[in-house]
Image 1 (tube, rainbow, N blue to C red):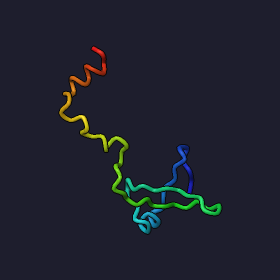
Image 2: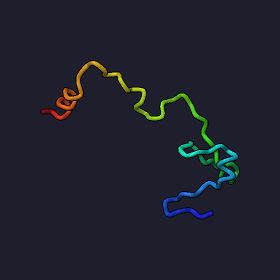
Image 3: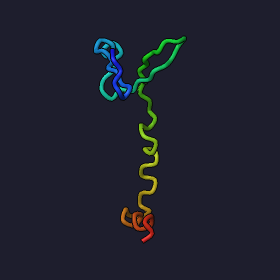
Length: 74
């Protein structure tokens, strides 16, 4: 297996199938006693993006146009 110039490797199909890894699956690499281990991250109920929890908190306070005007100082 070769590493690309971007540091990427292809996970062989038999390992992807065994670990049920599909496109967009989250994986992690851990070092255990000098051995690198591939771990599939389990899905959690936490927001995928750090700002997802903030979505809608300002709803109804100003229009988008008003926010743009206020932040641009015009």
